[in-house]
Length: 564
Image (cartoon, rainbow, N blue to C red; front, side, top):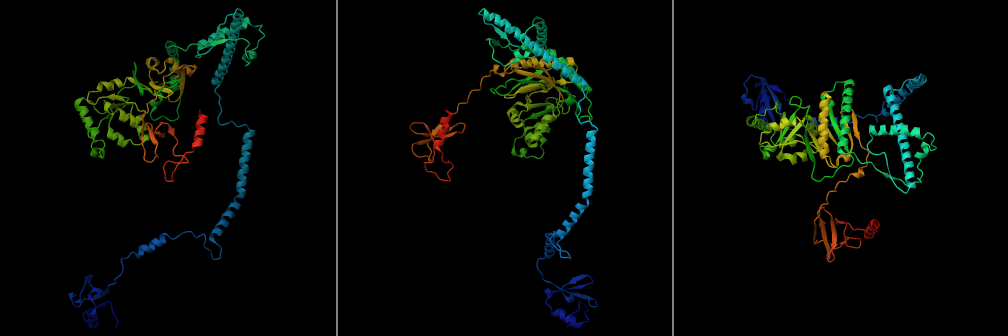
């Protein structure tokens, strides 16, 4: 029997066949609507028969697509119609192209060689040529002055030797002063004067400069004494004489300097710093030392400086530590400061940070460095001093009490600069002012800082190796001392007392105890005598899984004997 997909009620054969089918194996469609039974359809209508297909869950199309994705596109190992692999064909094409361009490459190479030879023949100027005639003239002058000064010093020393020889003939020993200590212009002038006098008196002398500078043994015994180090007054007077010259030179250099690109923050390149270097750094005894110096002519004011306040948390609960609104407590502090003390954000200060906000927003070191460079002055509540110092490292803020009115403390901070003595550092840098200020104002600031610095300087003024006035671009020395660092003596920090605890250990054999020191050193001692013993050795029982590996007693004893 032929089954048609379209029929009507008049087709008795199709109607009987549809009625004999199980209802779950088909469905009927009439005028776009689906019917489960034939009786629900109006007579005279065209009916379409659909058989149901019971399949699986599907996904066969996606499976085919995945196969197509993982299919390799590498066809190099396939063969063409001539039977050759595609990889060989492509390699042959690359070789042909390379051979075709060989002549072109040789022409380019020859052209470069000819250009290089022509450049050498014509004597082309080098890229870097120094043509500062003023510098060359000054360099020659300095060399001549230094040579004359050295010769004058040697001649003066020769005169001292002759005077000592006369004294020794009379059985009297004298001390000869050596030209040591700080190299100043006065010493050079004295040496030049002595040179002129000695040239007139000793024109017929047979001794030459080479003989005096030779390293042969001296026939005469001469006691050489060292010049005393400069006192505080001498250091201060020399610095006062050199400071205006250095400041004037820095201002002239800044005025002549022409930058191709205008810097983003031009004021930062005009800041003047005072750098002092130690002969010998001091040890850490009572922690870091901070001194705040009030400048007579400060360059900071509320209009050109930014202030950051780091205040305690108002809410320390776990919910506050994970609150996505990290500025919530900072806004509460703004309201408190405005209502209680009249401090307004943007006028008296720039930013408020709570400790939770600080630890959440500035987790990496580079973020903390950006924070330290973002604001000029930092104030921290005294309760957070140790936490912030540990979190920020060398960062040194100004301490305040958030419960009290600290508006005056903010005003005073604009006039102050920080001197931070850090143990085991060989230099200290202090902000002096700005090149836009007058020279007399900068000199007054520098003198005030130096006088305060010399009062608290570790080791005294003799521990100063050199002093510099500098900007970000250039540094000028204003004081140098070539004295030995062995003359500075610091008291060594006391060695900590390490408590030792001796007790029994179940893993040790009888007669042995374990001794643990406070610094973590663990040794084995004999119970009766209390002497340290080596355990375990190669003769003792041990297993591979043990944490304590056997010791070579003979080798250790040999090393200890060599150390003695």
